[in-house]
Length: 151
Image 1 (spheres, rainbow, N blue to C red):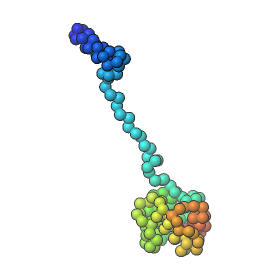
Image 2: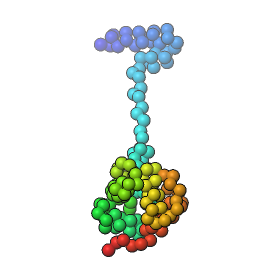
Image 3: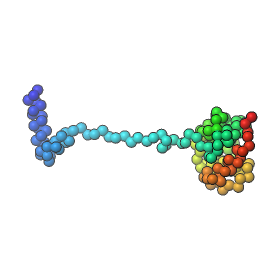
Image 4: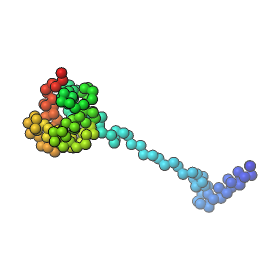
């Protein structure tokens, strides 16, 4: 066994010297390093869990209470506008013909556009309908939720 090991080391050394040095022999014969896997956090690809659009917890609860009062299910009335709350709002906006798109709970440009149309129609907000939840949209949403819809 020892003779076989010596022969293997000698052959490896000879190959290394021929290839450009003794140090090359070790790396030339080594197994390739495992490929590194790219790690992506779920935060980078998942929608935000809560999107209150500038509402305080109390005002977000009022929005949730309104949704529940008119027959849409916002989930737990907790002042955190999460996926379930936004699905309920999107369903309502779609039923009103405001074009919120998919009822997926994701607050994207279509949902914001529908919210802006809603606030213009029912709160006379005078917003530019651009799908961007800027300060004027957030202020109008804040003002709309000044009314307590909770029982």
